[in-house]
Length: 500
Ligand code: NAI
Image 1 (cartoon, helix red, strand yellow):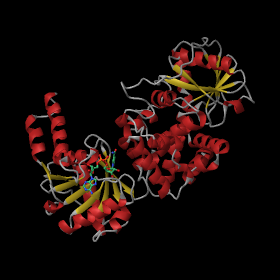
Image 2 (tube, helix red, strand yellow; image 1 turned 60 degrees about the vertical axis):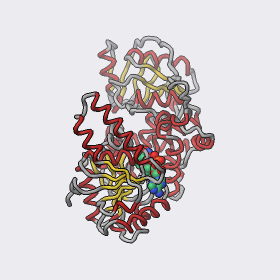
Image 3 (cartoon, protein in one colour; image 1 turned 90 degrees about the vertical axis):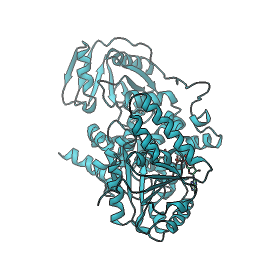
Image 4 (tube, helix red, strand yellow; image 1 turned 135 degrees about the vertical axis):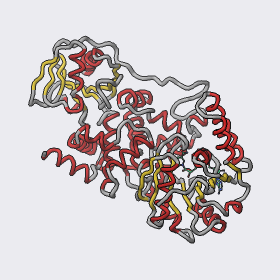
């Protein structure tokens, strides 16, 4: 099925953050675009904001003046829905409210031709429910852009049960013609990106509210070790805690209040108190008078390592050995033993979701957290158990510092920070595999939609599914089964990996 021709008129309803971005994308692709908003003057203001941004691009030499002017010339504020009679596609980006979206599309249906497509940019409402309430349900498809819409490369095309194949294909081809990567997803709560991303926020909130982990420590762990672009607390402050909380609640509700999606009381309190994030000057962090530099706990300089023995197959942490050698540290290797790096009698182990205190029953242990890439990461997070923690922590810190890393000590939290987050995300991604979404689609969605440094399923494979399963099982044992219940496909993959 072909994309809409660029001569076809497109209408965008709702001229807020998303509507403005979507209108810009459509106009950049050559369409005449009508922009409508119930707030007086909002459509014209949105077009003005686009103009200002385009002018800046022209000044920086990134865009030709003539191209900027023709793009702006294609954007027209609409004062009433009635003028949309010729629109071939109407994209709504109004308030995230099911009844409001249905009421709007019912009004639009009275104005447009029967074959005009009605696309919704909803981030969490069932497109089946919106489409099912219309006179011509087949024409209603989800077209979920990401913020900022003109820059983010992904569009989730939500193939509602009620949508016609023709409409789905036209929306897909049009998104591609607009320069986006389009992935087809089902109308399940949160679609792919917003559902698989829930643990990124939830695990940070749990680490904070249940274990009092430092906000800065969590953010630093996930960016400087985990390779994520922005730490979860800073990101929630940017998205807006009200918006993030609303999406979490809507996914929670839509999954029949499955506890793995349970919203956080901590976030609810912030929303109740009006601490919505950057937009109100205060969220997890205070942004006034200036953007904060959060405190990150740093281990003091530890002793230089003298005797280092690498035991067993270190798996994803193996690059630490090569890095130690490159730094002039002599590393003895012993195959076939329980994987760990022994530094002056202290065993450094990649977290498996169990407590350092439990590991200590076997031998003196310090746990370290997962890193995206142990060679290039700038920070390592460590956790000690109750016994002799200060001395053992200093030995571990000394080793990682000798490798050029900064070290953050954490209390004894199951799964630490990066590992609990990545395994929970990989687990959620695995639940979608049973719903017929492929590994490639999920990984593409998460790398393009929310800029994850690696797709969660590729990451699970890199960690090893058997280890991912062990981490989830240990967290289930220590924190309750409802939150970390391993997905069926994940279990199968772990068994398959163990058998091969
Ligand atoms: P926003 O609050 O910035 O803009 C919404 C606009 O819609 C406002 O200008 C409002 O006046 C207007 N509006 C409300 N009811 C209307 C109606 N009945 N008719 C015409 N205009 C109406 O909201 P934002 O962030 O742009 O979100 C819009 C939609 O996009 C929501 O469904 C949201 O879930 C979705 N979305 C938001 C993303 C984000 O990061 N903000 C990302 C992807 C989707």
